[in-house]
Image (cartoon, rainbow, N blue to C red):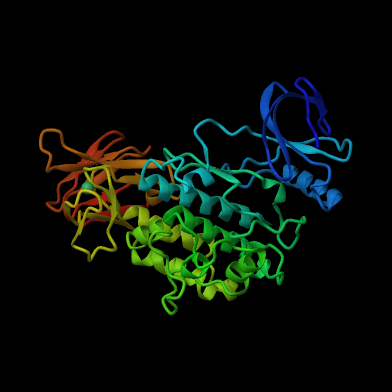
Length: 430
Ligand SMILES: [Zn+2]
Protein backbone atom coordinates (compact mmCIF):
# COMPACT_ATOMS: atom_id res chain seq x y z
CA UNK A 1 0.00 0.00 0.00
CA UNK A 2 1.01 3.57 -0.46
CA UNK A 3 -0.48 6.52 1.26
CA UNK A 4 0.91 9.91 0.44
CA UNK A 5 0.49 12.79 2.87
CA UNK A 6 -0.53 16.32 2.04
CA UNK A 7 2.46 18.49 1.01
CA UNK A 8 4.58 15.38 0.39
CA UNK A 9 6.88 16.00 -2.55
CA UNK A 10 7.34 13.56 -5.42
CA UNK A 11 10.32 13.75 -7.76
CA UNK A 12 9.34 14.14 -11.41
CA UNK A 13 11.85 12.66 -13.84
CA UNK A 14 13.87 15.40 -15.57
CA UNK A 15 12.06 18.04 -13.55
CA UNK A 16 11.30 19.53 -10.15
CA UNK A 17 9.01 18.05 -7.52
CA UNK A 18 5.23 17.73 -7.51
CA UNK A 19 3.42 18.48 -4.26
CA UNK A 20 0.57 16.28 -3.06
CA UNK A 21 -2.70 18.09 -2.35
CA UNK A 22 -5.11 15.23 -1.67
CA UNK A 23 -6.13 11.71 -2.69
CA UNK A 24 -8.98 11.72 -5.21
CA UNK A 25 -9.47 8.06 -6.00
CA UNK A 26 -8.22 4.50 -5.80
CA UNK A 27 -8.48 1.51 -8.11
CA UNK A 28 -7.03 -1.96 -8.55
CA UNK A 29 -3.70 -0.72 -9.92
CA UNK A 30 -3.05 2.31 -7.80
CA UNK A 31 -4.27 5.55 -6.30
CA UNK A 32 -4.90 8.94 -7.89
CA UNK A 33 -3.86 12.16 -6.16
CA UNK A 34 -4.42 15.78 -6.94
CA UNK A 35 -0.96 17.38 -7.09
CA UNK A 36 0.56 20.78 -7.78
CA UNK A 37 3.40 20.93 -10.29
CA UNK A 38 4.99 23.79 -12.22
CA UNK A 39 2.26 26.25 -11.15
CA UNK A 40 -0.60 23.97 -12.26
CA UNK A 41 -2.82 21.32 -10.68
CA UNK A 42 -2.75 17.80 -12.12
CA UNK A 43 -3.99 14.32 -11.36
CA UNK A 44 -1.19 11.90 -10.45
CA UNK A 45 -1.70 8.17 -10.74
CA UNK A 46 0.66 6.25 -8.46
CA UNK A 47 0.88 2.46 -8.87
CA UNK A 48 0.75 -0.01 -6.03
CA UNK A 49 4.24 -1.59 -5.93
CA UNK A 50 3.07 -5.08 -6.94
CA UNK A 51 0.34 -4.12 -9.41
CA UNK A 52 2.55 -3.94 -12.50
CA UNK A 53 3.83 -7.18 -13.99
CA UNK A 54 6.58 -6.00 -16.35
CA UNK A 55 7.70 -2.92 -14.47
CA UNK A 56 10.64 -1.74 -16.58
CA UNK A 57 8.82 -2.33 -19.85
CA UNK A 58 5.75 -0.56 -18.50
CA UNK A 59 7.83 2.41 -17.35
CA UNK A 60 9.62 2.87 -20.67
CA UNK A 61 6.36 2.44 -22.63
CA UNK A 62 4.83 5.20 -20.51
CA UNK A 63 7.85 7.42 -21.11
CA UNK A 64 7.52 6.86 -24.86
CA UNK A 65 3.82 7.73 -24.79
CA UNK A 66 4.65 10.98 -22.99
CA UNK A 67 7.31 11.89 -25.56
CA UNK A 68 5.01 11.07 -28.50
CA UNK A 69 2.12 13.11 -27.13
CA UNK A 70 -1.64 12.63 -27.10
CA UNK A 71 -3.26 11.45 -30.36
CA UNK A 72 -6.51 13.30 -29.67
CA UNK A 73 -7.82 15.81 -27.12
CA UNK A 74 -10.29 13.23 -25.74
CA UNK A 75 -7.45 11.44 -23.94
CA UNK A 76 -6.32 12.34 -20.44
CA UNK A 77 -2.83 11.49 -21.69
CA UNK A 78 0.24 11.01 -19.43
CA UNK A 79 2.23 14.27 -19.38
CA UNK A 80 5.05 13.72 -16.85
CA UNK A 81 6.48 10.61 -15.22
CA UNK A 82 7.85 10.36 -11.69
CA UNK A 83 11.15 8.82 -10.67
CA UNK A 84 10.97 5.19 -9.57
CA UNK A 85 10.91 5.18 -5.75
CA UNK A 86 10.35 2.32 -3.27
CA UNK A 87 9.50 0.03 -6.15
CA UNK A 88 6.81 2.27 -7.51
CA UNK A 89 6.20 5.25 -9.77
CA UNK A 90 3.41 7.26 -11.31
CA UNK A 91 2.51 9.84 -13.89
CA UNK A 92 0.77 13.20 -14.14
CA UNK A 93 -2.19 13.98 -16.39
CA UNK A 94 -4.81 16.74 -16.69
CA UNK A 95 -7.47 16.76 -13.98
CA UNK A 96 -10.93 15.67 -15.05
CA UNK A 97 -12.93 18.89 -15.46
CA UNK A 98 -16.30 19.30 -13.76
CA UNK A 99 -19.33 17.97 -15.65
CA UNK A 100 -17.78 14.66 -16.79
CA UNK A 101 -19.40 11.53 -15.35
CA UNK A 102 -18.28 7.90 -15.14
CA UNK A 103 -19.74 5.86 -18.01
CA UNK A 104 -20.71 3.20 -15.43
CA UNK A 105 -22.99 5.78 -13.74
CA UNK A 106 -24.72 6.43 -17.06
CA UNK A 107 -25.16 2.68 -17.62
CA UNK A 108 -26.78 2.26 -14.23
CA UNK A 109 -28.98 5.36 -14.81
CA UNK A 110 -27.47 7.19 -11.82
CA UNK A 111 -26.73 9.90 -14.37
CA UNK A 112 -29.01 10.63 -17.34
CA UNK A 113 -27.76 11.73 -20.73
CA UNK A 114 -29.32 15.07 -21.63
CA UNK A 115 -30.60 13.94 -25.05
CA UNK A 116 -30.28 11.39 -27.83
CA UNK A 117 -28.11 13.94 -29.64
CA UNK A 118 -25.67 13.91 -26.69
CA UNK A 119 -25.58 10.10 -26.96
CA UNK A 120 -24.81 10.23 -30.70
CA UNK A 121 -22.08 12.80 -30.08
CA UNK A 122 -20.57 10.68 -27.29
CA UNK A 123 -20.41 7.73 -29.71
CA UNK A 124 -18.77 9.94 -32.35
CA UNK A 125 -16.21 11.30 -29.86
CA UNK A 126 -15.25 7.77 -28.77
CA UNK A 127 -14.92 6.48 -32.33
CA UNK A 128 -12.96 9.58 -33.35
CA UNK A 129 -10.56 9.20 -30.41
CA UNK A 130 -9.88 5.56 -31.34
CA UNK A 131 -9.41 6.46 -35.00
CA UNK A 132 -6.65 8.91 -34.01
CA UNK A 133 -5.14 6.48 -31.49
CA UNK A 134 -4.98 3.64 -34.03
CA UNK A 135 -3.70 5.87 -36.81
CA UNK A 136 -0.72 6.70 -34.56
CA UNK A 137 0.07 2.99 -34.35
CA UNK A 138 -1.19 2.46 -30.80
CA UNK A 139 -3.74 0.09 -29.37
CA UNK A 140 -5.62 0.90 -26.16
CA UNK A 141 -6.01 -2.71 -24.98
CA UNK A 142 -8.41 -2.22 -22.08
CA UNK A 143 -11.52 -0.23 -23.05
CA UNK A 144 -14.28 -0.77 -20.49
CA UNK A 145 -16.97 1.09 -18.54
CA UNK A 146 -14.44 2.23 -15.94
CA UNK A 147 -11.99 4.17 -18.04
CA UNK A 148 -13.86 6.95 -19.73
CA UNK A 149 -16.08 9.81 -18.74
CA UNK A 150 -18.92 11.47 -20.63
CA UNK A 151 -20.30 14.96 -20.29
CA UNK A 152 -24.06 14.15 -20.28
CA UNK A 153 -24.95 17.65 -21.50
CA UNK A 154 -23.16 17.51 -24.84
CA UNK A 155 -21.62 14.04 -25.20
CA UNK A 156 -17.99 15.16 -24.81
CA UNK A 157 -15.75 12.25 -23.84
CA UNK A 158 -12.55 11.96 -21.78
CA UNK A 159 -10.59 8.70 -21.80
CA UNK A 160 -8.24 7.93 -18.91
CA UNK A 161 -5.99 4.97 -18.00
CA UNK A 162 -3.86 5.63 -21.06
CA UNK A 163 -0.94 3.93 -19.36
CA UNK A 164 -2.00 0.65 -20.99
CA UNK A 165 -1.75 2.16 -24.45
CA UNK A 166 1.10 0.56 -26.39
CA UNK A 167 2.37 0.50 -29.96
CA UNK A 168 0.62 -2.03 -32.18
CA UNK A 169 1.86 -5.56 -31.54
CA UNK A 170 3.21 -4.79 -28.06
CA UNK A 171 1.47 -5.62 -24.84
CA UNK A 172 2.39 -4.27 -21.44
CA UNK A 173 0.77 -7.04 -19.45
CA UNK A 174 -2.88 -5.98 -19.63
CA UNK A 175 -5.62 -8.38 -20.65
CA UNK A 176 -8.63 -6.12 -20.35
CA UNK A 177 -11.82 -6.34 -18.35
CA UNK A 178 -14.17 -9.28 -18.70
CA UNK A 179 -17.41 -8.48 -20.67
CA UNK A 180 -15.53 -5.89 -22.76
CA UNK A 181 -12.64 -7.87 -24.16
CA UNK A 182 -12.71 -9.69 -27.47
CA UNK A 183 -13.50 -13.44 -27.44
CA UNK A 184 -10.02 -14.39 -28.69
CA UNK A 185 -8.48 -12.60 -25.68
CA UNK A 186 -10.92 -14.30 -23.26
CA UNK A 187 -9.93 -17.70 -24.62
CA UNK A 188 -6.23 -16.82 -24.61
CA UNK A 189 -5.83 -17.19 -28.39
CA UNK A 190 -4.71 -13.60 -28.89
CA UNK A 191 -3.19 -10.70 -27.01
CA UNK A 192 -4.93 -7.29 -27.14
CA UNK A 193 -4.40 -5.39 -30.40
CA UNK A 194 -6.19 -3.02 -32.78
CA UNK A 195 -8.77 -5.67 -33.73
CA UNK A 196 -9.56 -6.51 -30.13
CA UNK A 197 -9.85 -2.75 -29.45
CA UNK A 198 -12.44 -2.57 -32.24
CA UNK A 199 -14.41 -5.34 -30.62
CA UNK A 200 -14.38 -3.56 -27.23
CA UNK A 201 -15.37 -0.31 -28.95
CA UNK A 202 -18.44 -2.01 -30.47
CA UNK A 203 -19.39 -3.42 -27.04
CA UNK A 204 -19.15 0.04 -25.48
CA UNK A 205 -21.18 1.63 -28.33
CA UNK A 206 -23.84 -1.05 -27.94
CA UNK A 207 -24.01 -0.39 -24.20
CA UNK A 208 -24.17 3.36 -24.75
CA UNK A 209 -27.09 3.00 -27.19
CA UNK A 210 -29.02 0.07 -25.73
CA UNK A 211 -28.05 0.07 -22.01
CA UNK A 212 -27.41 -3.64 -21.99
CA UNK A 213 -24.73 -6.11 -23.06
CA UNK A 214 -24.69 -7.63 -26.57
CA UNK A 215 -24.08 -11.17 -25.28
CA UNK A 216 -26.52 -11.11 -22.38
CA UNK A 217 -29.95 -12.62 -22.93
CA UNK A 218 -31.90 -15.77 -22.14
CA UNK A 219 -28.76 -17.91 -21.93
CA UNK A 220 -26.89 -15.75 -19.41
CA UNK A 221 -30.13 -15.05 -17.50
CA UNK A 222 -30.66 -18.77 -16.92
CA UNK A 223 -27.93 -18.70 -14.25
CA UNK A 224 -28.29 -16.95 -10.91
CA UNK A 225 -24.69 -15.79 -11.17
CA UNK A 226 -21.91 -16.23 -13.70
CA UNK A 227 -18.92 -18.21 -12.48
CA UNK A 228 -15.56 -17.57 -14.08
CA UNK A 229 -16.10 -20.62 -16.26
CA UNK A 230 -19.54 -19.45 -17.42
CA UNK A 231 -18.15 -16.00 -18.17
CA UNK A 232 -15.51 -17.63 -20.35
CA UNK A 233 -18.25 -19.58 -22.12
CA UNK A 234 -20.61 -16.64 -22.79
CA UNK A 235 -18.05 -13.92 -23.54
CA UNK A 236 -15.30 -16.03 -25.07
CA UNK A 237 -15.91 -19.60 -26.22
CA UNK A 238 -19.53 -19.39 -27.46
CA UNK A 239 -20.67 -15.77 -27.35
CA UNK A 240 -24.14 -15.38 -28.90
CA UNK A 241 -25.46 -11.95 -29.87
CA UNK A 242 -28.84 -11.28 -28.25
CA UNK A 243 -30.24 -10.15 -31.64
CA UNK A 244 -28.48 -12.76 -33.80
CA UNK A 245 -30.89 -13.01 -36.76
CA UNK A 246 -30.17 -16.75 -37.20
CA UNK A 247 -30.29 -17.87 -33.58
CA UNK A 248 -32.96 -16.61 -31.19
CA UNK A 249 -31.85 -18.63 -28.19
CA UNK A 250 -30.18 -15.70 -26.39
CA UNK A 251 -32.84 -13.03 -26.95
CA UNK A 252 -33.24 -10.31 -24.26
CA UNK A 253 -35.63 -11.36 -21.50
CA UNK A 254 -38.54 -9.12 -20.47
CA UNK A 255 -38.11 -8.02 -16.87
CA UNK A 256 -34.31 -8.36 -17.04
CA UNK A 257 -33.19 -6.76 -20.32
CA UNK A 258 -36.00 -4.20 -20.67
CA UNK A 259 -33.74 -1.42 -21.95
CA UNK A 260 -32.41 -3.46 -24.86
CA UNK A 261 -35.92 -4.63 -25.80
CA UNK A 262 -37.30 -1.07 -25.67
CA UNK A 263 -34.42 0.59 -27.48
CA UNK A 264 -33.41 -1.93 -30.18
CA UNK A 265 -36.24 -1.06 -32.57
CA UNK A 266 -35.84 2.67 -32.07
CA UNK A 267 -32.57 2.59 -34.01
CA UNK A 268 -32.44 2.61 -37.81
CA UNK A 269 -31.84 -0.62 -39.65
CA UNK A 270 -28.27 0.31 -40.70
CA UNK A 271 -27.23 0.78 -37.05
CA UNK A 272 -28.74 -2.60 -36.11
CA UNK A 273 -26.96 -4.17 -39.12
CA UNK A 274 -23.62 -2.74 -38.02
CA UNK A 275 -23.91 -4.36 -34.58
CA UNK A 276 -25.20 -7.62 -36.10
CA UNK A 277 -22.11 -7.74 -38.34
CA UNK A 278 -19.61 -7.18 -35.51
CA UNK A 279 -21.34 -9.50 -33.05
CA UNK A 280 -22.00 -12.40 -35.43
CA UNK A 281 -19.43 -12.74 -38.25
CA UNK A 282 -17.05 -10.39 -36.40
CA UNK A 283 -16.75 -12.72 -33.41
CA UNK A 284 -14.45 -15.04 -35.38
CA UNK A 285 -13.36 -12.91 -38.35
CA UNK A 286 -11.62 -9.72 -37.21
CA UNK A 287 -12.11 -8.21 -40.69
CA UNK A 288 -15.88 -8.19 -40.11
CA UNK A 289 -15.39 -5.77 -37.21
CA UNK A 290 -16.17 -2.20 -38.21
CA UNK A 291 -13.24 0.18 -38.53
CA UNK A 292 -13.50 3.57 -36.86
CA UNK A 293 -14.02 5.16 -40.27
CA UNK A 294 -16.96 2.86 -40.98
CA UNK A 295 -18.50 3.69 -37.59
CA UNK A 296 -17.96 7.40 -38.22
CA UNK A 297 -19.82 7.25 -41.54
CA UNK A 298 -22.72 5.35 -39.98
CA UNK A 299 -22.93 7.66 -36.99
CA UNK A 300 -22.77 10.80 -39.15
CA UNK A 301 -25.57 9.46 -41.35
CA UNK A 302 -27.54 8.80 -38.16
CA UNK A 303 -26.91 12.30 -36.78
CA UNK A 304 -27.77 13.93 -40.14
CA UNK A 305 -31.18 12.24 -40.26
CA UNK A 306 -32.14 12.65 -36.60
CA UNK A 307 -34.54 15.51 -35.89
CA UNK A 308 -35.89 17.06 -32.70
CA UNK A 309 -39.67 16.98 -32.26
CA UNK A 310 -41.24 20.08 -30.69
CA UNK A 311 -41.79 17.92 -27.56
CA UNK A 312 -37.98 17.61 -27.23
CA UNK A 313 -37.72 13.94 -28.28
CA UNK A 314 -35.29 13.01 -31.05
CA UNK A 315 -36.51 10.79 -33.92
CA UNK A 316 -34.65 9.40 -36.91
CA UNK A 317 -35.66 9.04 -40.56
CA UNK A 318 -34.37 5.78 -42.02
CA UNK A 319 -33.77 7.48 -45.40
CA UNK A 320 -35.22 10.04 -47.82
CA UNK A 321 -37.87 7.59 -49.01
CA UNK A 322 -39.52 7.54 -45.60
CA UNK A 323 -42.35 10.08 -45.94
CA UNK A 324 -43.30 10.47 -42.29
CA UNK A 325 -42.64 9.17 -38.81
CA UNK A 326 -44.46 9.11 -35.49
CA UNK A 327 -42.69 10.77 -32.57
CA UNK A 328 -41.66 8.03 -30.13
CA UNK A 329 -42.57 10.24 -27.19
CA UNK A 330 -45.60 12.45 -27.94
CA UNK A 331 -47.01 10.42 -30.86
CA UNK A 332 -47.34 13.37 -33.24
CA UNK A 333 -46.85 12.62 -36.95
CA UNK A 334 -43.89 14.37 -38.55
CA UNK A 335 -43.61 14.64 -42.33
CA UNK A 336 -40.18 14.21 -43.82
CA UNK A 337 -38.61 17.68 -43.97
CA UNK A 338 -36.55 19.02 -46.86
CA UNK A 339 -33.14 17.41 -47.20
CA UNK A 340 -29.92 19.30 -47.94
CA UNK A 341 -27.49 17.18 -49.96
CA UNK A 342 -23.81 18.15 -49.81
CA UNK A 343 -21.62 15.48 -51.41
CA UNK A 344 -22.35 12.30 -49.43
CA UNK A 345 -24.11 14.10 -46.58
CA UNK A 346 -27.90 14.19 -46.52
CA UNK A 347 -29.03 16.58 -43.81
CA UNK A 348 -32.69 16.52 -42.72
CA UNK A 349 -33.63 20.17 -42.18
CA UNK A 350 -35.88 20.41 -39.13
CA UNK A 351 -35.83 23.20 -36.51
CA UNK A 352 -32.60 22.99 -34.45
CA UNK A 353 -30.88 20.76 -37.04
CA UNK A 354 -27.18 21.69 -37.09
CA UNK A 355 -24.94 22.05 -40.10
CA UNK A 356 -21.32 21.14 -39.27
CA UNK A 357 -18.05 22.53 -40.59
CA UNK A 358 -16.85 19.18 -41.97
CA UNK A 359 -19.92 19.17 -44.29
CA UNK A 360 -19.08 22.47 -45.97
CA UNK A 361 -15.29 22.57 -46.07
CA UNK A 362 -12.22 20.33 -45.86
CA UNK A 363 -12.19 19.73 -42.12
CA UNK A 364 -11.81 16.79 -39.76
CA UNK A 365 -13.78 18.58 -37.04
CA UNK A 366 -17.08 16.70 -36.70
CA UNK A 367 -18.45 18.91 -33.92
CA UNK A 368 -17.88 22.53 -34.95
CA UNK A 369 -21.28 24.00 -35.89
CA UNK A 370 -21.56 25.95 -39.13
CA UNK A 371 -25.30 26.56 -39.34
CA UNK A 372 -28.66 25.92 -37.70
CA UNK A 373 -32.26 25.58 -38.87
CA UNK A 374 -34.47 28.21 -37.23
CA UNK A 375 -38.19 29.08 -37.29
CA UNK A 376 -39.38 32.50 -38.48
CA UNK A 377 -40.86 34.24 -35.42
CA UNK A 378 -43.66 35.98 -37.38
CA UNK A 379 -44.55 32.98 -39.56
CA UNK A 380 -43.89 29.65 -37.86
CA UNK A 381 -44.36 27.68 -41.09
CA UNK A 382 -41.39 29.49 -42.58
CA UNK A 383 -38.04 27.91 -41.75
CA UNK A 384 -34.57 29.18 -42.47
CA UNK A 385 -30.94 28.10 -42.31
CA UNK A 386 -28.74 30.50 -40.35
CA UNK A 387 -25.12 30.84 -41.44
CA UNK A 388 -22.84 30.31 -38.43
CA UNK A 389 -19.72 29.61 -40.51
CA UNK A 390 -16.76 31.91 -41.11
CA UNK A 391 -17.50 32.29 -44.83
CA UNK A 392 -20.27 34.11 -46.65
CA UNK A 393 -22.63 31.89 -48.65
CA UNK A 394 -24.34 32.49 -52.00
CA UNK A 395 -27.85 31.13 -52.37
CA UNK A 396 -29.70 30.53 -55.63
CA UNK A 397 -33.44 29.94 -55.23
CA UNK A 398 -35.29 27.86 -57.86
CA UNK A 399 -36.75 31.12 -59.25
CA UNK A 400 -33.21 32.08 -60.28
CA UNK A 401 -32.99 34.82 -57.64
CA UNK A 402 -29.59 35.02 -55.98
CA UNK A 403 -28.80 36.25 -52.50
CA UNK A 404 -25.68 36.48 -50.40
CA UNK A 405 -25.88 35.15 -46.85
CA UNK A 406 -23.12 36.49 -44.58
CA UNK A 407 -22.33 35.19 -41.08
CA UNK A 408 -25.52 35.48 -39.01
CA UNK A 409 -27.69 35.78 -42.15
CA UNK A 410 -30.56 33.41 -42.92
CA UNK A 411 -31.72 31.72 -46.13
CA UNK A 412 -35.24 30.39 -46.64
CA UNK A 413 -35.63 26.63 -46.80
CA UNK A 414 -37.28 26.21 -50.19
CA UNK A 415 -37.21 23.20 -52.49
CA UNK A 416 -34.71 23.51 -55.33
CA UNK A 417 -32.47 25.99 -53.50
CA UNK A 418 -28.75 25.75 -54.20
CA UNK A 419 -26.18 26.90 -51.64
CA UNK A 420 -22.57 27.77 -52.48
CA UNK A 421 -20.46 27.79 -49.33
CA UNK A 422 -17.74 30.22 -50.45
CA UNK A 423 -15.32 27.47 -51.49
CA UNK A 424 -15.62 24.44 -53.76
CA UNK A 425 -18.45 23.02 -51.64
CA UNK A 426 -22.09 23.41 -52.66
CA UNK A 427 -25.40 21.78 -51.77
CA UNK A 428 -28.99 21.53 -52.89
CA UNK A 429 -32.22 21.44 -50.88
CA UNK A 430 -34.91 18.98 -52.00
ZN1 LIG B 1 -42.71 14.49 -29.95
